[in-house]
Amino acid sequence: MGFTRQARDVGVAVAILALTALVVARIGGESGETIVGTARAADGDTLTLDGHRIRLVGIDTPEMTQVCKRDGADWHCGAAARSRLAELLRAGPLTCRTKGTDKYDRWLARCETADGDLGQRMVREGLAVAYGGYENEEQFARAERKGLWGSEFDMPQQWRRMNGRPQEVVHEAEAGMIGSVLEALGLN
Image 1: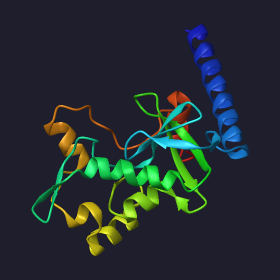
Image 2 (image 1 turned 180 degrees about the vertical axis):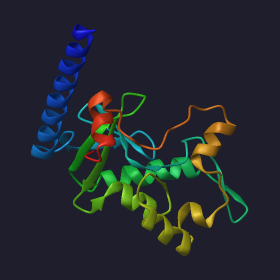
Image 3 (image 1 turned 30 degrees about the vertical axis):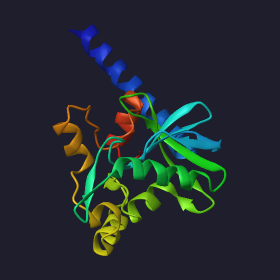
């Protein structure tokens, strides 16, 4: 019985030291990486930068084949979202700050050009919905009936479900055990 208690005490001490090291590391540095370069749009919320697939965190856009209705006519809203992101990417060098990866091993990141945050622009222009961020921008787009909000559309998540497509989860970076511990402590 003494050995079990001693082993437990050692385990607790190791856990406390590891947690302390994690907290110090988190306070001492930024999470993720910063990548700068020229990117191309894969769809309305995913881009390729320096050989890495990056999913813009906090937004969700219609799928490339998704069709919405605007003024009674078909509007290829998924293709429109991709086209707008491609246009925004042509504004010059892009800076992305990664926040982990998603279940598809894409980096989750907030990205900006000299003209501002891409996710914020996409939601504010009504070509993306808020998905774990940018709720104020979505309220603006709704009020102004911009993009999707001036059309009849299925939310991207609902459209994927109805069309047998893989579901996206609200963007929380999968940073493994360390990320889970930091999240539980409110440090991530």
